[in-house]
Image (cartoon, rainbow, N blue to C red; front, side, top):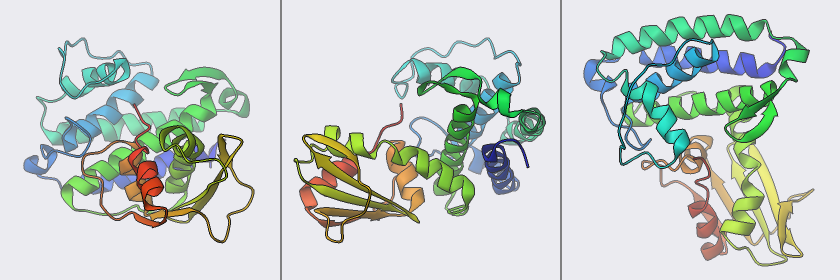
Length: 262
């Protein structure tokens, strides 16, 4: 076991992803996913590109122009390593993933507690190396699920890596409930995602996590973890299996406001 459980969760997700992609045909590799503009291969190429960069390897020198699906500087940066690999067969990208994750796993397992506490800039703002590892678990599992939905191969729907990713996204629920959905003062919302439950209350105009879940909230929203992943990522193929009980209008505004990732 590494110094951080996130290392174990990341390696579990890499193993799941490698097994998923082992027998894909070239047609499978080029299949579009709900991640706007990206194929199955593009999702894997993105993960290869990030982990290779974390190992200190130079990124491809490549111009991508202005694709319609790119909406911000982070998306533009991500597109470089993806587009540079689009001319490769899928199998070549898979082998690159296998090699780079093995090297990255060895690097991460050598981290000490002091290393994990080092301050870094993450895509979510200032944080630590440990925070960045949670983001890597979240990102990797989300893209694994993009591939699974595109190919109709469900799997890895629960477990510690899933719990870490869902727990990270759940931190944004007060913002979604209060700012995006405009929940009125005094209202209560319970969101159940797989085995995770979060209660949000609005007090003096501010939404916050409640200490206890009320027995009869104004809204109760229930969904699988995989659907939550698709919604927070703004995926175009998010399943329509969210259950809203109570104030339907508020519940739907909350669901519609879940797309929080850039």
